[in-house]
Each structure stands twice: as C-alpha cells, then as structure tokens.
Length: 461
Ligand code: UDP
Image 1 (cartoon, rainbow, N blue to C red):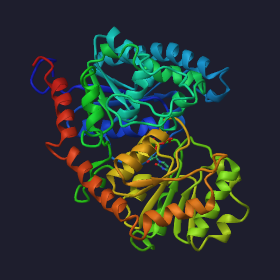
Image 2 (image 1 turned 90 degrees about the horizontal axis):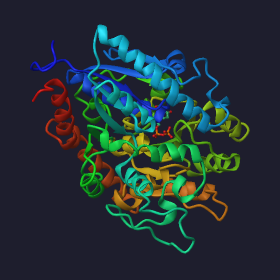
Image 3 (image 1 turned 135 degrees about the horizontal axis):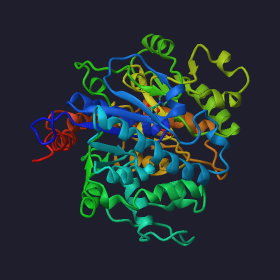
C-alpha cells in the first residue's frame, strides 16, 4: 500500500545494542508492534545471527544482520573497547545503509527504532529520511542521571564531602546509589562515553521511548517530559505473563545462552507455592570467587529451595561439590527461561543484581526481591526497589564490599516469611496489578504505543 494511504502497513527496523539485556526488551517491543500490525525487522550483528539460540515460535518478525567488524566473533580481542565501538560505528553505519538500500526494492523501511547506545542509528535514519525512535532500555531515573552528567549539571568527579546528590525528578540519592560509571569516576571510560553519547543527537529523534511505565516512575518521567518528549511504553513483558488468559508466542526469543527450560520447569512444578528462591545475576555480572562462596553458603543456611543460574563462565567459582551436596534443595543451571520462572507460583523471592530487565520483570510478575547490585545502573535500580517501590530489600556489605552468608540468609528470610516482609509481599502484588494496567488496552503505556503505531500507519495525518 502506498504511503499516506489509510492503514499503511509500516515497516520498522529495530536495532538493539548486541547484548542480551538490550535485545530482550527490544524484541519484546517488536512483538507488541507486530501484534498491532506493523512489519518488523530485528537487526543483530552477523556473529550473533549465526550463534544465537533461536527459540521455536510463531513470531512473524524477520531477522537481519549487520556487521560490527567481528563477523566471526572475537569481539573481546578488539584492541580496546574504544576501538570496538569506533569500528562498529563505521561498519555498522555502512552495512545498515546497505540493508536499507536492499529493502527499498521490496519492503521499504519507514522507521528505525534504535538503541541510543548506537547513536549512529539515528544518523542513518536521518540520512534515509526515515522516522527515528530512540528506545531506552534503562530506567527513566537512570537516564535522567546520565542526562544531568551529559549536560554537566552533575559535575564529576563527585566531591568526597558530598554525602547526598540532588537531581530534579529523583529522590535524594547517596553517591553510592548512582550508576557505577558516575560514582566510580573513570571506570570503563569507553562504555561511559557511549552512554553519554546517547544524548548528543537525541533532539533530532522523532520519538523517545523508554521501557518503563508511568506510575512506576511518574515524577521523573513528568520531569524529563518537560525537555524531551519521553514516552513510557513498558513493561515490555509479553501479555501472557501479565494476564494468564492470553496466549502469546512466548517461546520466540533470541538468546545468547541456551535455556535449560524443561529441567527448570519440571523441578519448579514439584515445589510448593512461594517456596523457592530464584537467583540470577543476568548475562554479564561476574561475582568474585569469595562472594560466590558466601552466596552458596547463604542459600544453604537459609534452608530454602533454590534455583540458581550460574553461567558456564562462572561455574568454576562454585564451592567444590556444592551442587551434589545441595541437590535435594537446589537446582543450578547455566541459563533458564527467566520470565517463565518468575511467573511460576513456586517462586517466593528473587536474589537479583537488579539489571533493569530483571527488575522490571520481577516487579511486573509480583516477585519480591533481594537486591544485590554489582555495577552500572544496578545500584540505582536497587535503591528504587528498596526505598521507592518498597518491594524488596538490599543486602548489606561488609567493609570489603562482601555480602556475607548470614546476611544473605537474613535477607531471604526477611522477604519470604514473617511480619517484617509482609509489606514487601503486599507491594509486590500491588505493582503486578499496576504494571498490567499500564499495558492493558487504554493503559498509559498502551496509549503511547497506539499513538506511535498510528503515526506510522497514517503518516500523513
Ligand atoms: N535472563 C534469562 N535467563 C536467565 C537469566 C536472565 O532469560 O537465566 C534474561 C532476563 O529475563 C532479562 C535478561 O536476561 O531479560 C537480563 O537482563 P538484565 O537487564 O536483567 O541484566 P543484564 O544481563 O543486562 O545485566
């Protein structure tokens, strides 16, 4: 159908930064858009395209690949992170442009939804005269902090005398609540530069979409909306998890790791309601060997059932014979279908690093959290989990930054049983309801998605 005609089937190309925590929410958003009638092409790197685990499923989303300069892998061998990102910008721009040229003849692209970690995605959209939408995969609060650093309204490094940080739209924060790149100034300079670069051309974007929902981050969303047209469109959790009556293509996912689905679900099916501690630190965080040991002993001391995701690269840090010794109480897997796990009634709490996806997923599925943040935005998310949304607690560290086994057991017990955890468990149920309302028909996020979709379907109106 020609552009400008009613209900033109618009074609959106979705470009996530190629790591699990960015692919997941953008793929889920792609599914929402596809259900609403848009044609979707998801773009990953050539290496990921070859190596990712594609779950079986019925999604009608096409998958295409561009180059980051490491089509055969070995990205970790790049001279430096700076060199990798510079090369990705160069060859990514070239190969994305080629892809758009190629589609001109069959199904021309109307819009690029790009991850602002790849801010050059916006430049390519502009070059081709396409609608551009930035899709932020981190919380609005975190984006607001980075924006203030970008604008130099929050000066770095923080002064040692600074005990509190005041940023409009946010509660008063302690310096250690800030993302690690801000608090530990100078750490991971290339990543931090990429994060600040998200804002350098952002005023040219036609849409700014954030994976959050209005009631969750009302104050900061309303504050940011005064100077940037931010629209909350989350949580991007498939509707079937939010409302069990709905069926969905839940199995369609792209995973860097192979989920051990059947074993996990069978094991959970044999456990009583809210009896299991689920433990995961996401796709990237690495615990120190000593921390891993404390965590293992903490789980054992708690005497609860546990399902623990220990990625293969972390496995060697487990105490010797731990899996065998605890096999009656625990299941350790290298990766699991997290949404399905969190939605299972056997889960009673989630020990999490507080990656934004894990936080949103737990919130939306009503699972109380024990927050054990490691780096990047996780401290900020943990602060909100504990003090603002009040649906979890945060582990305390000793003077060396270690969370001891007794503390881990204390936190598990606090959240899962007794009066002290009652408010947390009640709030968990409340947030589940509010999250569902946001994406239900006519909910705040649904309306924003509808407006976005109809602007693409009816570009002349
Ligand atoms: N995840 C999963 N299986 C696992 C662990 C994690 O599917 O065993 C998913 C999880 O549902 C989330 C993503 O991986 O969508 C992790 O993203 P998050 O932002 O929480 O953390 P990151 O990996 O970016 O640190």
